[in-house]
Length: 189
Image (tube, rainbow, N blue to C red):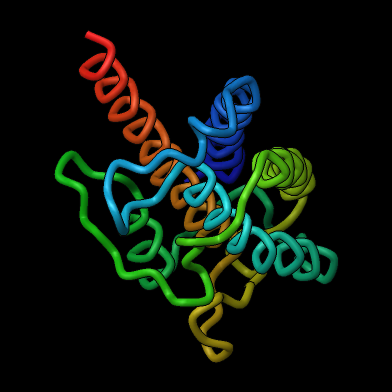
């Protein structure tokens, strides 16, 4: 796969996430704290979950890119494990639920719009990293991952995992909003 094509695809997804976050910032905090049922996540909790992953991956990506290999930035070859992780993050028609690590589960946290502002900053940083990545070999440059210090993924796969994970939860945010709207229309109608 051409690296430029992958970076462009991921940049477009991140720009869409940024546009959605701008819209979310216009909402009332009570709407962003609403949850469909006990144990489900509110919009704030979905976004805080993404912040927690961003807190690990953004510095990790930046650090590895600073030491990155620029030998062949034109072509990206996915690794089998990275490809598996990336594809497992993509939302599917019938959602494949995943267990969240306790440290990444924000349920019950006291959250406000600062969570959304932080994620907006993380998305802006991701766009800068993607721009810088145009001169980095996405195959030879490796990053650590949150689940094990022993496993390293190719930089291109790490970008895919993080941004596909963002996509998964931005779709979850949209579902929460839709459920909330249905609930409001039933109670006011």
